[in-house]
Length: 385
Image (tube, rainbow, N blue to C red; front, side):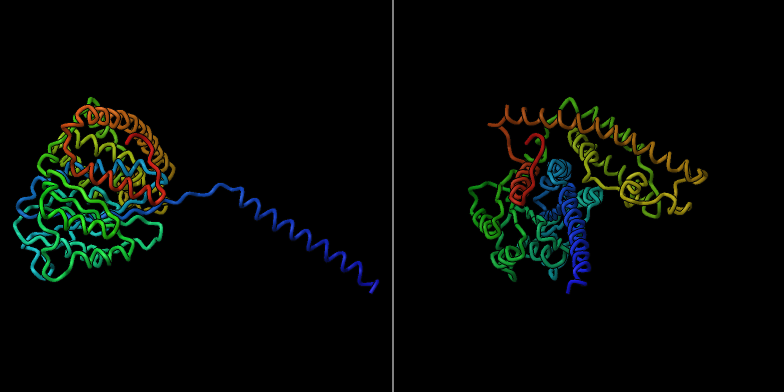
């Protein structure tokens, strides 16, 4: 037994050292700052596109970027996906309940904007329950348990018209899946149809609101920052480097959506510019600057996928060219964010001054709803309300 003692002592020393190393390693890991991952937000906007809803469509076109900008203030930074549905158009066919998925979930906000500008109204039956059912069954929702999953359904007829699906039953299914239904009724809050819209929202702890769709479409607040922001947008556009098969098409669409926003109003263009300075506006699938920032190695990009101006550059020249564009973009986006903050404060003051006359628009209802529901999920919001 005595001969074995040195070995036992040696073993104890070795075990002690191992434990110290393991404890030190675990303790070191606990001291490392946590990496905050983007939180997922899935938003579906289901719009009634029957004949009477032209004002609503115009409002959606003008106010998309206001909604994006509000979510851009959220912390931790959201990973936003949006989908667009429309309902009430007889051309969609009775089999679908006159509902169409115009755009499945995407983080391409230019695609969302293009979809809104492609809408044309047409008379038809407006089946709210079928629109919600389509959103639940035809879209690939995030399965992240911490994700915020929201539907905004907007219309001006009874929510209980569908002859096949009960709006109450479909709302119960949505609630069981953790999907919130917010209802926006385009009409007077004293209308008898309001009760049904309220019931659908209440079943999922969603929000109900009524708006004047026509007033909302023109309730813009012009600011002194609108024109400077439009000029900065032109500078910002010069920092994009389209590449690959999707490059030319996506770049063309970006410029078309700039033109669409500008055609609506100066405030709409200013709001879009502000959104393009947030991380929610993504371009890494077609823009080399964003792609490299997302991990693409420039040396691995085929020469044939590069723009003409880069084809004759060597590897170091390509890297330097992209870095130059990236630094320029960062500088311009900083100026845009500063102006956007000033603009938001100006709008807040103006809305407070005209509060008695202010008519809530589609953007205010959606942004306030998203904000309150995101806060319940643990998000916080920087900047002005």
